Image (cartoon, rainbow, N blue to C red; front, side):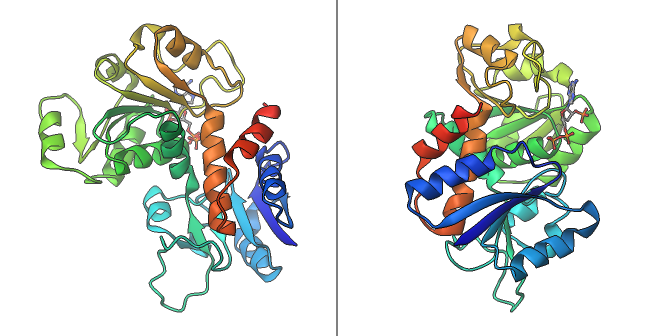
Length: 302
Ligand code: ATR
C-alpha cells in the first residue's frame, strides 16, 4: 500500500484526504492519504522521516510551503514562486520538470501545483489566459502563485494589494517573466511601477485596471468565512470578466455573487483546490486523474 500525506499546521479540516482517496478508489489504487500535523521546529526531520518511512508523496500546506524549500529539489516553477505544495520521493509519475540536473542530489523533488490549479481552473471553464489582461488582488502566498501562473501562461498581470510595497516586491520578483516588446509598450503610459509583464499597485488602482481587464483573481483572505464582504467593489465588475476566487468557504462568496450579477464568468475556489490536487495525484502516480470523482468528493464536503 502507498501512503500519501499532508503536512501543515493545522491540517485536521483539510479536504485533501477525501479528494485523494476518492481518486485512489476510482483508479483502484492501493493507497491511503493521511494528514500529518508537523512540528514547526522539525520540518527537515519531517521531510526526511517521511522519505525514510517510504511515504510515496507529501502535500505541504500553511505554514510550511516556504519552509520545506531547503530540504527539496524545487522545480523551476516552485523555485520561482518560492513555495512548494507537493513533494515526490521517487521517480514514479515524474513529469520531467525537474530542477535537478542529475547532480546526484537525492533530495526529494518539490513542486508547486497551486500554479497549475489556477491555470487549469480557468481552462476548465474555457477561459483564455494567453494574451489577456489579468488583475490579481492580494500579494501573499496565494497572490504569488496566481501571479506567476497567469504571467507564465502569457497574461499581462496587475497585482493590487492593500500594502502596496508587498505587491511591488512580488512584481519585482517576477520581472521579465514571458515579457515581450508589445506588452512592454502597452504599459508605457500607465501610472504604476512596472516589472516586465507584471505590474503592481494599491487597491485604489482597481477602478482603472479592472475596466480594462479580462481576468480577475481574488488571492486575499477577504470573504473567507464571511458571505458579506468582498475585496472588490461590486460596481467595478463587468460582463467581460472571468472571476476566480481562491476563497472556497463559502463557495459562493460575495465577490462571485456580485460578478455573476454583473454578467461575468465565475470560477469558485474549489476548482483551484481540485486542480492542484489533480496535478499532485498525476505527479505521484503517473495515472490520469479521475477529475469528476475528485470534484464530487470535494463538493460533497463544501
Ligand atoms: P496567503 O499566503 O494565503 O496569501 P497572506 O500571506 O496572509 O496569506 O496574505 C493575505 C492577503 O490578503 C494579503 O494580500 C493581504 O493584504 P496585505 O498584504 O495588505 O496584508 C490581504 N488581505 C487580508 N485582509 C485584507 C483586507 N481586510 N483588505 C484587503 N486585503 C486584505
